Image (cartoon, rainbow, N blue to C red; front, side):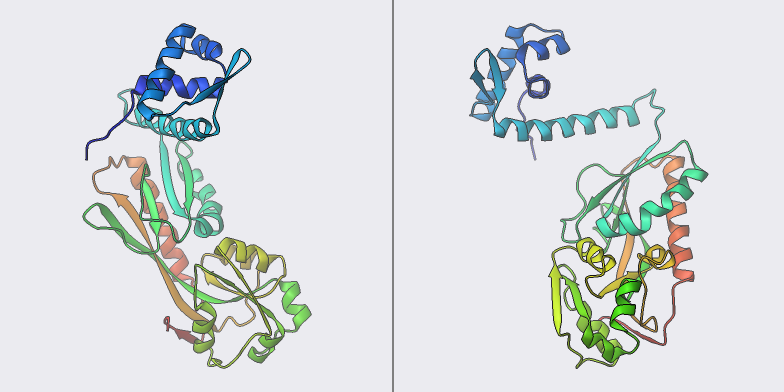
Length: 309
């Protein structure tokens, strides 16, 4: 669809002016006159249909609306500048932009990145995060990680691994509540997440304890918040492996009932089909696939496994 865009030059002048907080300073930074700055701001205000600055004494102060608009314009110019550096003839920077769900990025991907850095010290990996209920991949990225495959007409989709979930808690909480048998869970506070409904019911069904109930429950909006509450000893929750393998290995979390594992989320690597794929990007995707394969090969195999009910 055609884009109805304001003047890019006016947007550039506006972004600098909002950041500098002064027409005069913006003019000095852009090497144009105060009057030229004023004309470009007026042109943009006419295009948008509302004022962007108000006069206070001798200064022109951006409105709250203008400050929010400036933040988005600044991010857009950053993307344009990044693309120009990456795809320009003399580009030397090697940057990979990865978009991944927040918990997976924080608990699984980022702790592994030093391993890739050791292989390719000349490559910078930038990670952005998305919530599990975020819309499909949008914007500027080289590699995406998602729970469900995207449109294969636009993306190359490669399976990474499948999570298996079990009860997780802090070691102190398990010791204090003496959680040794399934029925001991009645003494615990059960923590759950709005974006992961029925996870407790699914796990209890796999454990053959579908009639078990908690005396108290707490629910959070996002899983990384629930996970922090678990680590802080507020209660027990359902956590995915291998996403939380490092937390378990370091003792930040324990799995009091490791034999009961429920197959859960499938994760996929997603690459735009029409994007340039230089050698360093292929190196990263091969490394990522190898890391996922290694996790799958060493995944715990409990005596009671089940698929989602």
